[in-house]
Length: 279
Image 1 (cartoon, rainbow, N blue to C red):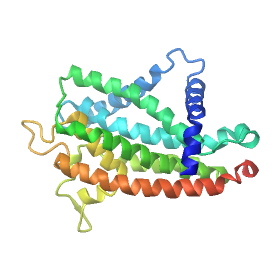
Image 2 (image 1 turned 90 degrees about the vertical axis):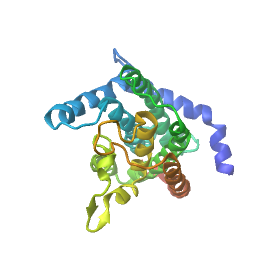
Image 3 (image 1 turned 180 degrees about the vertical axis):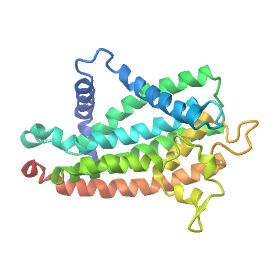
Image 4 (image 1 turned 135 degrees about the vertical axis):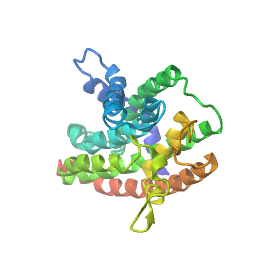
């Protein structure tokens, strides 16, 4: 709690690091922060071409579906990619100035959160264009889903940031892990297709629910896409879970994420004393 109070005390420094990261990222860029909105549009265009024309699927309003999943995934993957280099890229600060080192990986999450806010505007625009908005109890999942996403992401960002200081291969291995993780998360294909599938006698649906980011994506899809089984569809597009069941899953993952954050924070704190020497 004392360390937490110290972190709260330097929240302005955390904000400065987020602003610095955004400025460095878009330095000498004509479009600037507009690239944050163009990235999900590019993903959507590519996957719409592949899964809409070349390998056609039957998901109505597919851009809304894919953007709802990408919103959660992009925040997660961007945080980890930037967070892995957070300490190394700020070596001059670490070796010369004292400050709580935890704010370095946390600033990567803050940067991704800014990007996520801009990408949300793109998603809302497509929801309006397709008239695909379904307000109701599903929107009550949003605060819980965001809490779980930020907690789990912050935990992993601290872990990979500390690991990358000693083992620089971490950032390259992370790229491969995230690529595999992406395809093990139902972002571009309908999560409803997992129902009834089995591998080695185990339910694929339950196996996917062991993936914390998949659980968050399930929630984001339910919030923004909304319809589990659109009219005329023979099978559900989304995982056929009620809002209450999704909330219960998120609550469990949230508790586990808090425990993971504590362990990652403790590990990061114990290793931070050696950062200056290892850099």
